[in-house]
Length: 157
Image 1 (cartoon, rainbow, N blue to C red):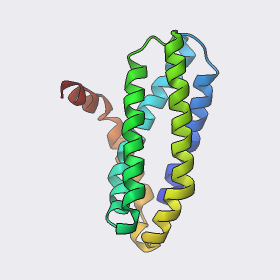
Image 2: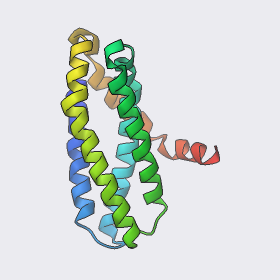
Image 3: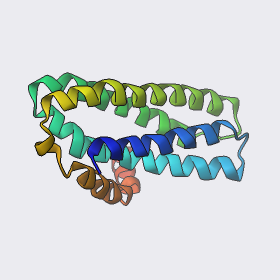
Image 4: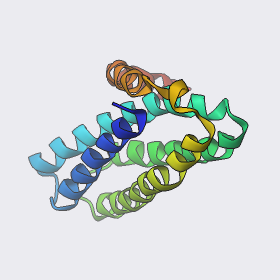
């Protein structure tokens, strides 16, 4: 599986979770469950993406701006997700903030798939990126186990 297919598969899952969360209301078990799955999957996805894909893109001069822009968006979305995690899910404020996150993340995924992947294909030869799909998936699995630890560290800072 290519890195592009691996990331797109995650994005499809994230879009489905965003839609599921948007269809829930209040502090329901369904919303809590979908949110937890989304939160952990996106956190591990973003970390793995930065470690495998964006680090490779940044090593190529022409890919640096695309990679930096996406990493900045990851940080902004991470902040929004942390805020949402600390809020009461039944409050109108939670839904407003979630809708902002949903809009921003959908835009980010579209931009990655349409623009960043195109740029990456121009600057990273296929033979150099071969195997990166597996590396991404392995890194994501590792990152999933580190989400809580990393959150605790960042809250201490």
